[in-house]
Length: 459
Image (cartoon, rainbow, N blue to C red; front, side, top):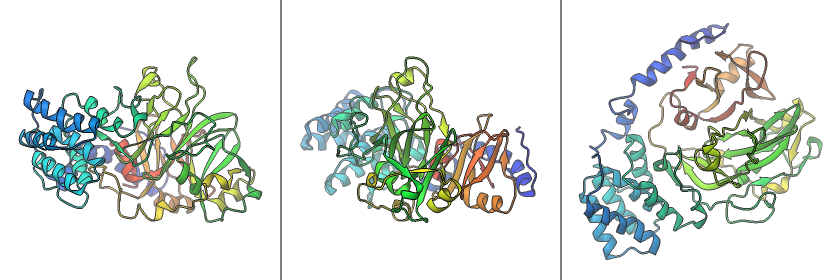
């Protein structure tokens, strides 16, 4: 089924188990495409009707969702409309209820909406975080969207953030899974990112200094190391947790570097070398999430990208089939990175904007803080993995802790054409010829949900 050149007992075992992993992934999908673990965690899904909404339910949806959003009101008409929706028995309508719940600040209205969603889904959602519980059930059960869902969702979301009009358009994106991350869109022009914004502020062409001048960094500070054409640069996590997006040039190549704090994933995409006639994408944070992964977009065309996979899913760049190539990001500590790569440059302290967050060790301690639905149970949700896609197209995740121990013990770890190597205290994946394969670190829940058929080492 697949080939591999592995020489250690651990690796030989992996070769056998990785084949079983794909069989496991198929066998655990029950009728309707649901995994056994989704049903185990959330129960059996409700029956879902096909076809259009009845005229009375369609009118109620217009009143409860679109009119309430556009007029910023919730009155007797909306209350009556919600009762019609809840009595319809159509679980698809829980999706726009969930969208509306995300922006509701009134506890009373939140309970009212949760009651309607619970009635449609057949579950009790009157708990501390009803929006999260509602959305988790919808995702895990893969409840279809109702008719005209994008138009309804667009009306709700753009009534809150006008800059989203060009974001909410048709494309190869599952709009059911898109939620608000609690921040506004970063729409500042390129190379004006010194200007403040009411958003997560990207950094364009960031100022850098030699390693010897970076007295502000402790050796134990985590950095994301990138190498392009023999040129090295460190992006401190302290800065990336504030900026979440950098547009840079390294080794003569243009890069867009998103960091999703929620997914524990820093990635580096080449934003040059695209087909003729396509201008360099300038990547920005949209303020939206999809299964707890940040949604990035191109400032020039407003094309939305799948941040984790690197391909455009809406807009002109999607129409042209643009997929960005990845460079490897090595997650390690500053002391080891600068010792092994003394020629490295590093971003300057002022880019941290005076803040020193440590999201990784606080808010991520008890699972994802945004809805993700069901999660592959083979590893804990926040286990670190090194992810890469093999030449065959098969994604594979290597448990970072186990891989570090094995590599430090002199073992070889590989999968098909992929080989792991130590790099400055971190891990990178290379090909048989030593070429960069564009690997990066991420939380298991993120890698496995964007690569649901992933192989896993060690299984």
